[in-house]
Image (cartoon, rainbow, N blue to C red; front, side, top):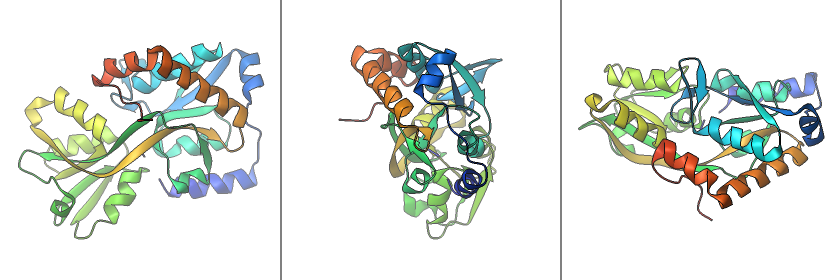
Length: 254
């Protein structure tokens, strides 16, 4: 979902301070799997009071159950998640990262666990199409693929960046920006939660597949997680979690 300076930093750190990621045997031996997410992108991952919840969290917990271990969650800013992974602060990241060639140079991804896209969101009567972004002030979260894409759109008046996606939304609602570029599913949820804002969702800048991120070369753990997700898709657990948060099944088509 979400790219650029952090990749370069991650690659530098991996050269300067190489470290071995915990493999599947180490995870099972410890009885825990450390999973990182942002905690600020509802309904994917967010806090209800002090409780971390959301689609990513419930799915991560279900994966841990399939592996026979307990999930231990870590939260930090989105643009630091892949750097922390490279430094072995946790075993994987489940935070809606779009699978891109750039990111694949720094981390390995699971098979896609969500299919969505970058939506153009505005107040009613506002921008709906890419051409409508000309002359507009656009808000977007730092560290995301959305930011890179918006900067490539000709004619955009200004791109304002925010540390959290929720900050970008709030600035649209407050009228400090005219367009918010975000995940389509996140935008649908926002429309439902703040109907008074009278938001509209326009076209997608592009479609995107999200993957869980692993340290480069941690193939055995990645394979085990892929199998766990496949089993959750087959046994109906994935669909149940998805429909709870999105009222639809958001798996990628086969």
